[in-house]
Length: 461
Image (cartoon, rainbow, N blue to C red):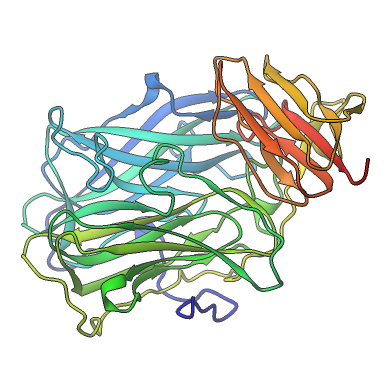
């Protein structure tokens, strides 16, 4: 992919601090709504995520246009919680509208319109001046989230959003599109794996083709990525696959808290991503093919990664497909903070508990090594793998059979080849044939302390 370049060492651009976003003269009647969702109680080193009982979140109950929005994790007094206590891995806000079928995701057709998401990248919603996301007083919102307690004692947290709403002036409405490199088939858990093993400096690309159901103009774009990513890009196949909008990650420096906490649910992700914006807009025709591309480091393994581009489109004026010059005001600034634009080399550790109940890095979980001469079967019950350390010959198949009513997975923390299972529960199974010898450290990304495992793949007989 010749159009992909990585430049510079530090991200310096427009500041993304939410409170510093001054309203423009065109946005004169602004109301700020602050909502704390929770409380959520987490046990020591516990992961909690959305359940049917906590999907709903209070909407602003205003008619108008959201022009700014930001979400974070706070305590009961509204003070931000540091990552070393409780971490917000991701949060997604979805508007299901005033009645059934009112709002739907335009690409995949699911109920509800995903309009804002953030997580480790800690990004606010930012739109160009004069644009906003239309909301109505009777709208109902849902939320999808994941929290991680990094403490050896119980913790309590709220997920807070702060939305700035223009209530009087009419703005140009934007429609949000969530374009996933995994397509609509995996829209609920849109993860994939980069197996690694590529040459030094090589990249692994993944893409999916989509289209807008009606003509529109691209206004803004922002990406959601995991560790190991170089960036996301929207391209236009009908115009020589030229790039339209790009979102690049910014990673923390070596001393950033993301690299200092245990346990780890996945390779630490970016601390920010760039926003692409243009008030002049980029025209796109109805049903015109577009493609979303992710670029990841291919030398090392990266498991359970994502590539989701958040697009905001103005449909207020009909337009046609065009290969004309891109607008001169198209900007893709990186946040103004110290960081690294190239993905750092990170080894995801296994985590266990010492005698004091403190999280620590381990080489393997307790238990004897069980040696197999061929294929192996592992039961997954009561939040544990029935065999915690196993040795199999090269080419053997290991199968995990899930018996718990709650979700589990099998994820490679580190080893010769990256892989992971989908989220699985009672009555399902997952199999992996090991074709590369070496030592594999595995864990459940939803239960990273309780569920750990190693597989040693032997060469020869």
